[in-house]
Length: 343
Ligand SMILES: NC(=O)c1ccc[n+]([C@@H]2O[C@H](COP(=O)([O-])OP(=O)(O)OC[C@H]3O[C@@H](n4cnc5c(N)ncnc54)[C@H](OP(=O)(O)O)[C@@H]3O)[C@@H](O)[C@H]2O)c1
Image 1 (cartoon, rainbow, N blue to C red):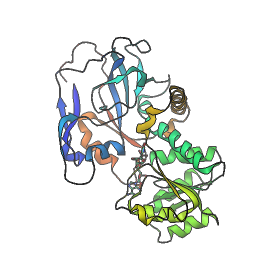
Image 2: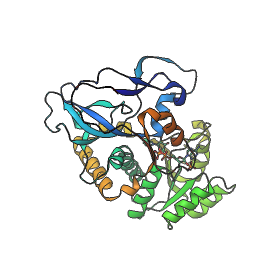
Image 3: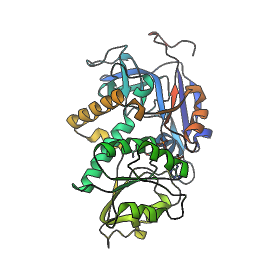
Image 4: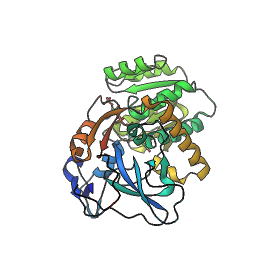
C-alpha cells in the first residue's frame, strides 16, 4: 500500500515522501480498516507537518499526515457490530488518512448518506464540526445579542460555512479578507453581509463603520499573528476574540492587548477537542454534518483533486492565494479483499 510519510518536521514539500509498504494495517478489537478513497489537504495538516517555529526536531517514528477522509470499510476487528465490509464511511479524527488504508476506532467511522459524492463525503466532518464548535463559541459570547460578529479569512472553506450560517440565523456578520477580489466574491455570494479587504489602508475604519457605535461583539479569527492587536482594538468592551487558526505572520504579545481595561475575552477553539463532547452531543453534530453534506454540497467546495502520488502538486495548490474550496487527494477505487497487490 502507498502512504505519505515524514520522519522530521519542516516544509511539507521537502520532508514528505511517498512510501510503498508491503502490508496493510490490521484492525484491532473495536477498530475498522478503511480503504481510503479521498482525503483533504487541510491547512492544519500542513501546520502539523511544519511543527512549531524553531530548529526542526528529529522524530522517532514515521508519521502520515491527514486527519479526515472517506473510503470503504475493508475489514472489521473483533467486537465491531455497526460497520460491515463494503460500507462507505467518512472518518475523523483519523490520523494518517494520506494513505491507501487507515485504521480507526469503529465509532469514528460515520456512514456516508446515499446520494452524497465521495468528494463531498471527504469534507463532511472536519469543517462542519468546526463550524458547530465555532457557532457555540459565538452563541456563548453573544449571550442573546445579535452581533455584530467579524470574521477573518472569510473566503476560506470554513469562512463560507460561517457566512451561510450567519445568514440563516440572522447574525450580523462582517466579512474580512485580504484582497479586493476576495471581498468582491463574498459580496456576490452574500450581498447583505459587508465585506472589507485588509489591503485597503482604511480597513479598520470601514469595519468600525459597519459595526456601528458599540463595536464588534465577537471576532472569529483564523489569521492571528500581528493582526491580533488590530482585531482586539475593534472589539467592543466585554467583547470576545475566538481564535481558531494561525494563517498570518508575526506575533502579538498578550500584554499588547487591552484585555484587563476593556474586559475582553480570548478563547481558543479546536475541532481536535471534538471527541471530548458527550456521545449525545457528538451524535447531534454528526447528524448535522450528514444533513449538510446531503443538502448543501456546494458549501463543501472542492478546489481540485490529485492522486496521492501527486501530493506535492496538491500541497502547492492548497497554498495558492485566492483558491476557493479544499484540495483533495484521491486513490484508485479498487475493492479487492486479499493481501495488497502490486501498488
Ligand atoms: N481550530 C480548528 O479546529 C480548525 C479547524 C478547521 C480549520 N481551521 C483553520 O481555519 C482556517 C481556514 O481553514 P480552511 O480549511 O477553511 O482554509 P482554506 O479553505 O484553505 O482557505 C484559506 C483561506 O485563508 C486565507 N488566507 C491565507 N493566508 C492568509 C493570510 N496570511 N492572511 C489572511 N488570509 C489568509 C485565504 O485567502 P485568499 O483567498 O486571499 O488567498 C483563504 O481564503 C485555517 O487557519 C485553519 O487552520 C481551524
